[in-house]
Length: 226
Image 1 (cartoon, rainbow, N blue to C red):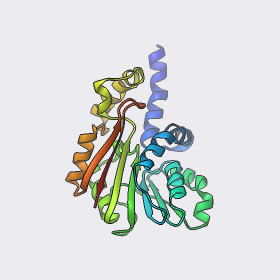
Image 2: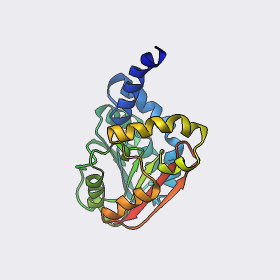
Image 3: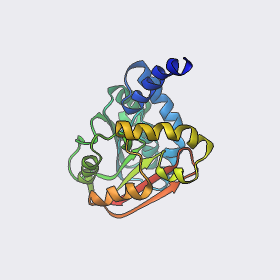
Image 4: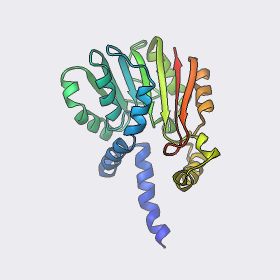
């Protein structure tokens, strides 16, 4: 009985992780911003972002990564793209000052058709969104297209297969549910080597990954150069 009562709220929350929408989506967006802050900081520390560079965050959600990246690029430019209009609005509010100074831009868009010209950015990042890309290889091709020669892509996931080898209590509790969903709903839960392999297949060079299997559900971030 309790399980059936909880099922619908859990389904609503999970749907809004994929594409936040409405009041529930706004709440989930704020929760994700808080939950993913430490993951985002960790990823950015590995990205080698410089002060005057141009950075694109794909699936920017509520705009926390955009804000942190803009702090790293005081003479540069940061763009965020998200396919949820509710998250676009939230990201605009979170970055209003930088937008007013033309240092940040937030657009509605999709990983499979990024609304930017070829060779527009020095970095493309995606934090905790790659699971939900409907066509991951097309999304990576788009990231490759908008990067300048030598530019870097960084794909960061909070949940990876590395954690399965020696799962923590948190990983045991949540991992089974999400692994089952990944098989049923097409979520892309990968190991670091699998993620790096996709970057190589998309044409990126100097591919590598870093991982923190004991953090949360198994952090991993894969990098590649155009």
